[in-house]
Length: 97
Image 1 (spheres, rainbow, N blue to C red):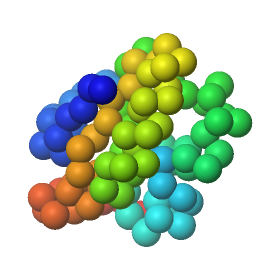
Image 2: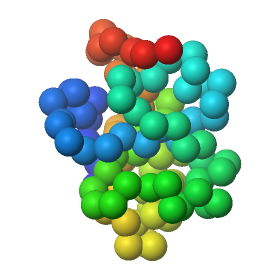
Image 3: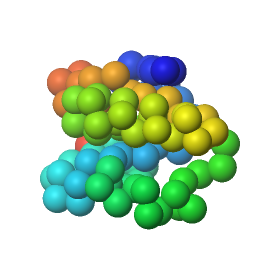
Image 4: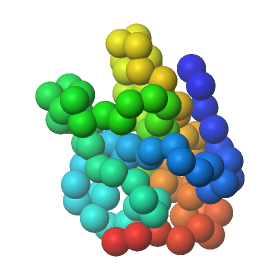
């Protein structure tokens, strides 16, 4: 499975970021520019996924890793963000609310 660190994510440009946490978690603070597609609903919303490569993030990296595995098996070019939003916040990077 492909993965990147939050430091690498911070310097990425032009790669969509999908946050698979639930809506209340997302609303509490997320990586700027992330789009919320909760893991619990993503199976019914596959048409909303970007064309081409994209990154997937959750809180600590577990849910996003499972989503990346499932989407990669379906032919998507998805990359997991190691450490998730928690690591992003710990690194001192800004969040949107």
